[in-house]
Image 1 (spheres, rainbow, N blue to C red):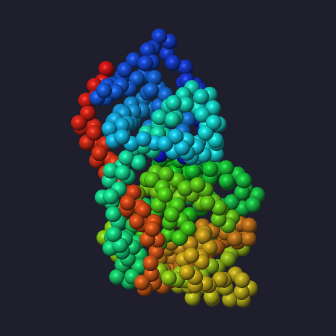
Image 2 (image 1 turned 90 degrees about the horizontal axis):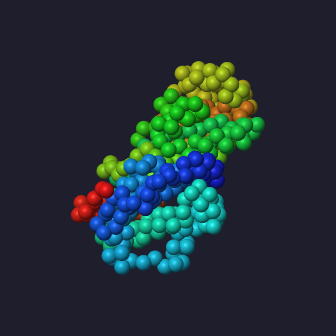
Image 3 (image 1 turned 180 degrees about the vertical axis):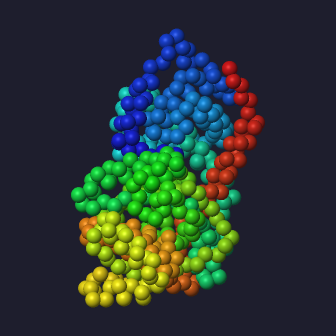
Length: 407
């Protein structure tokens, strides 16, 4: 998987241009491998490697490119045998959508590719093969993927009447961004969003994150999808393992999340109707002195009621205690509270343009009886994973039956 931005496209163009010249005397159109009655040429392999470099995608190696082209040849043969054909409008729309990921028109994207020595046909064939293959899988197996209400109920409900038994492994980075540093932090976050591995993302977390997970490289333990903030759940579901969200702006900070794994479990998950928290605002922001004061306070409080004694004699505004539905929580509070158990504390956030540290404590959660959440998202997730399983099985079958001869 890959993400496109104007910045990564420009960087990759420079790299691709550096390798764009073929070796003198090399027969670029000589077959490298025969796949049934089709051939993969040296030219196609070099084109695929350059194309992946421009996309800043994983697997931009000769070996990976050859393997991908063999798979695409097998997919193309299956597509032709099925009689499936894309309409000109469908093809054009797919190409425009792909180019749009880099905020470019199709014509602008093709021009940028050609400047890097990547033929427009390479781009066109790559996109068409992927779209047609998805259409073939849906046409062939779609009727076999009927998600019943009972299945959705099992995925979403617990004995208390709510919850999703989808759980996720997520890594996090929250970078403080007071107004003087907002632009600098945004640029850094956009660079982190292009991370291509969990190791790279964790390295960034150790360097820049303000969360308690920083020492673990931002890695959080398994958590139920339904415990995440409602606004974050569809963003996480839209990722494949290894992918990173775009930077999320929260008060005085920027947050990024990487999906490491996702699975369904048979364990019922509790759904919550209300979250109670206390926020104690400490002057000094993220200064070493204030962070030490927060660490000392954390050692002295066990429950939210204990904070009243520390706030006594100060303005009422220094201590906020609220009970809200998950959807009503401020997004940054929701992110931090989703990681806490009752009585636990986060000191990752600030207010007042970074001048006040938020000592955020979870007081408790109230379970929702017969609460129903995101049936459509869960159904779509189950359907996509089943179709992906069919696609992988069909490709494995095609490959096992194929005559693949390396020249």
